Amino acid sequence: MSDVQAIRGMADILHPQSALWARVEQVIRGLLEHYGYQEIRIPIVERTELFRRSIGEVTDIVEKEMYTFDDRNGVSLTLRPEATAGVVRAAITNGLLHNQRHRLWTSGPMFRYEKPQKGRYRQFHQVSVEALGYPGPDIDAELILMTVRLWRRLGIEDLELQLNSLGTPQARAGYMAALREYFSRHEASLDEDSRRRLDRNPMRILDSKNPQMQEIVAGAPEIRSWLDPESAAHFAALCALLDEAGVAYRLNSRLVRGLDYYSRTVFEWVTDRLGTQGAVCSGGRYDGLVGQLGAPQTPAVGWALGMERLVELYGLGGGQPADVAPQVYVVAIGDAAWPSALLLAEALRDGPRPLRVEAHCGGGGLKAQMRRADRSGAAVAVILGEDELASGQAVVKPLRLDREQQSLPREAVAAHVAALLEEAR
Image (tube, rainbow, N blue to C red; front, side, top):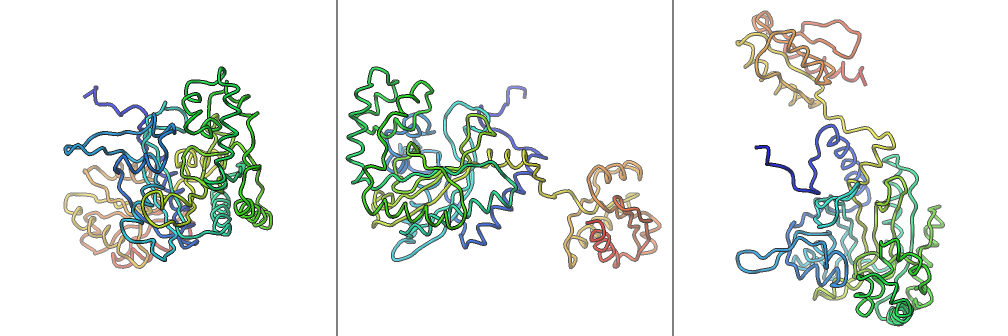
């Protein structure tokens, strides 16, 4: 079976790394509950047209990166490259948008065919948070404040918040014309992607990652001069709210994001601790997307964070994994003890304080089982042998405390173990 290998760019997440993931996921879920966001679970596969209409034809994602295939009925399907379009589609098809407001979140794997590198995989994982039906800058600010609280709970530092406003599509028409005129003067120096985008969507050139394009991009006109009054007021109010909350940020007029559905507010949290892949969390407002997909116009805003990068930052900052080791290891000596040992393990899991219990399976003598108990990380071993079976008792042996082992009636084991675990905390 040596030829059975993982697909390039799709990584296995093994213990103990998976325990770091579990801790980060626990913190995120708790945070979102505290802000009143409800979980939604959406399909991994959607019709290709959904992403073409929402993300935009002239984007790297649609042009180069989507995993697209025809099903047996000839319908073009795509593995989701991001979650926002799927959440909006779900809201439309399930009737969630008529005179309603929703705070939603989802998580899971996304897929993009791009060059695998540190922090970037072809199957990667995101948490996506979306607020549908909210028009004002207050919800923009809340979403950013939520991320600030998340970094604090995870102990992650050295992240920079970058902000920009893209205005409305109508107001951007003048800016697009100015960009087209500017980049046309430099057409001979543009790379192939930028020349292709020059006529269709010159704003995408600002998103170029080609180092040789950065000097040309730096000289391009800035969008703030073309903002409509309402967008300018919205952005000023957002900045004022962040200033009042003491949130530091940097205005970045080149920040346009890689998806066409954004309007007005866009933002990114970036770091220099992960090499060139510095964006950890990105988002913004997409007021036109719902209408673009055929439903009544609905204001919306959200963000998405990359779990691979976030978990790496959490680990670099000394973050601790979720405690998934068993608290109790049940040892059974002799064939006659196995049934009672398994039932005792079940009783410990059912107690007033349910415990994480690993019952030894596979046979072995006392010494071998105690070695396994110690390696498991359990704080306590509970031992059943022939004598204990005859007396209706069990031996409770602390493994991480300087306490003597005790022989107790089996019905008293759960309470005694809980007391030992409390002492060991």
